[in-house]
Image 1 (cartoon, rainbow, N blue to C red):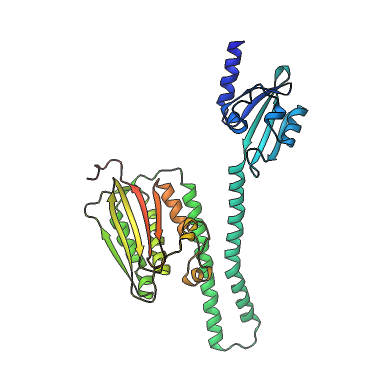
Image 2: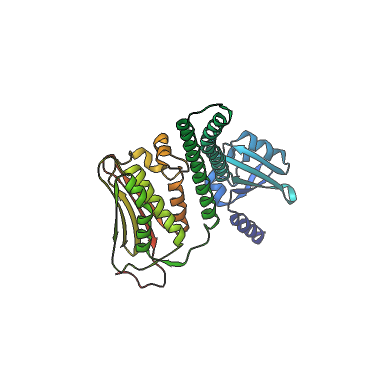
Length: 341
């Protein structure tokens, strides 16, 4: 019997979610997860005292095998799936699976679809409205026709940028478990990104500077994704960090504590602190109208975050009103490189 009880205990402890055995309305055994959730001394106690949840007790006391969704165990809004299995000699195995992560993921999916639909619906409605006017109006002066055509083109381009960014996110997420192993020069990335951003910078009266530490070892990464990351950071710095006065966007490639640092900073207006925790959320905007006018899709920093996660790096955003913004990405050097001094 002692060996049997030891085996039962080992089996229960091997189950990650809360699990317990119930015999004649009494808890005869519980694993550590169940004791953490319901109390350290629940073994031997009446199940009606240990689980103070009417719906859960109703199913356990009925003794019918099956699964049921519950809310309220371990927290007012915490969702669970209660699973009851009948064993020999009237013993019931009760397992409780926390569905919080699954519910959060589903909520994120629903919110994402709603936000993406809204972002695409707005320019589409403009395109339809202007196109209908052009097709139905008998006479439209050339200046108005040109203006309508330019608006339709601009809104179509905006939709294309959103779709392209959504596709980028999908590709990055598909590769998230594949560690990139190419050797990439951060200095090269910085200089190409500076050239890519120069036309937009000139249009905004902004200068781009590149500062690269000499003899910086290569990092392990995906060249195309790291260039996309840097392009997004530079474009954001130009769009939102360049004011009417002479503004400077600086791209730095350096090393610190054995890691590579890629930093993009601007001398613009800065960001209020309450917005900083949400900047990498999809479609989150501090000022939606300004973002659309500047040509942003609301996905740039979300793409940056996912690329950093795929590279097992870290992302830090520092900003304050009147002090500009600094975004730092910390990445690992290629493994077969000598440790930087």
